Image 1: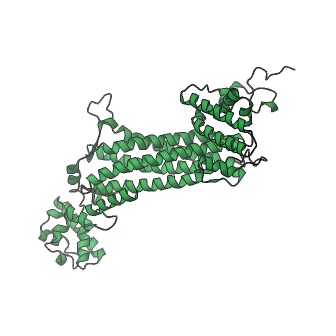
Image 2: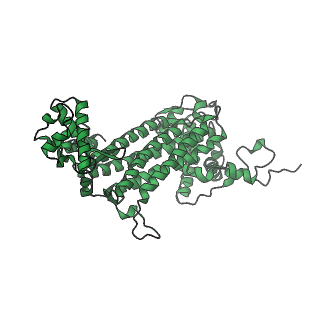
Image 3: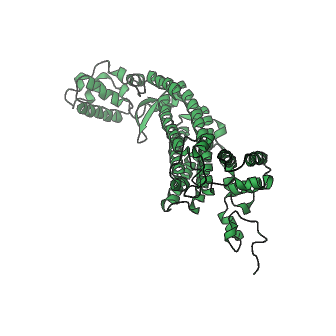
Length: 471
């Protein structure tokens, strides 16, 4: 019988099989062209594992020295772009192990003692994701710093606050921006909390049942900076809930930035005209020479759907898998990598874009003349002068109707006109005094909301100072 394996490179698992994997299957099952980005983490994990094996007397000290020497060379080759990635070796782990064996011989073959690719890949993913979370947390900090700078500069810049996209009450642009700071702070908390569950060591779980070698998992965890080990070998190699949690946190962050983007797009429209964005974040039209399109915020909206899709993909990937490891889990990496890349790129560009916002304060101020923005202040004024709130609400609604018929804003009424508009609500008109017009100004409305979390400029500045101190 002809030996069908003789012309094929030997697989790490080839002894069981009588024919080679087809080229189509190689391409279909290989992950090396996307998981090679975990090469540095793979080397870090392998070095910690080798150090533990030597410390436990499972491999010789010379083996460890050879492995360390070989890995140093491999890392250099990867960083210089000289490493030859091979589809036949399936993934990043086998590519590195094969190169190590070529460099240092039997010591390279001994490296895999006491572990499986199952716990190896689970460890590499956690190391990689931990690094990505640390980068994301730093970028959130950059975004927050620039957001606070713009908010502080506009702590007293009056603009309409909206509900249902209708003018509701006066706020300040700084107060509005601080809403996104609070969202980003919760996002940072979620990533930091997710990191705690990412930072648990699967290595030592082997394929699914642990290993009979006298390993020291706590030592490896300490070497790699993990907070603790995964305490069940089946769970450690098979679940990807930490990756799903990361994608969920990412989806929420992108949702917040998508909402912000929607507002930037609306505000930049000439129909609103509240802001302009720096040219470097916009593009023109191939046919309409006047156009300045807010492409970056629009793409953030679009990429949010991409991140949401990755979350659903990972949830779907895991939902039908029995314990323990299954090949399905190879599909965890591309959505995870793409999510991290998208979040990192978005935060990086958003932090810069914040500094490119030019505020059109006069347009914001003019918009407050539409929609009766201080109507609620008038109702509060009546309540403070003894009228029940529901009666005050009705009286002001009648005043707004009268102003709408006249085509003016509430502060443009004379005192007699304002009283007359409320005459059908018992007790309302007589409670309106000369001081009412102070209440109806934008400044009066803003200044009156001077509690924690309110839009009074002094409270906005206090919130910014608190944010700079507490993060």
